[in-house]
Length: 90
Image (cartoon, rainbow, N blue to C red; front, side):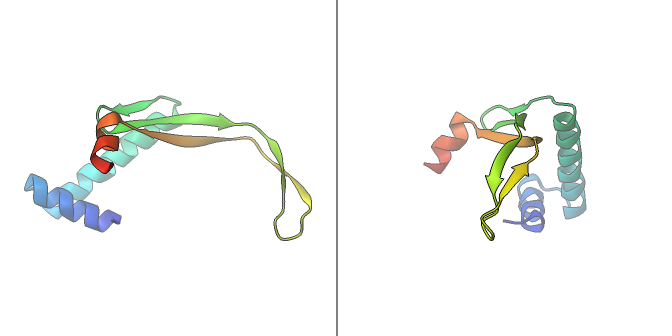
């Protein structure tokens, strides 16, 4: 499912227009992004939680040439599915 299909599905279930559903989804994405950018955790009970983890710098290997490379430290977004979501999928 892509963003347009998600907007259409939200509009159908909530009886909102697609324009309003797009505004709501965009607002959620913006608020979630800002929250994660601040290092805060975002938890949606029953769905899952998003958090920011720090990945340490490490040595790697270029698969094409085999030469060693240094991989810089960075922050990554992590999602952990909630129990209800796991039960729906399984």
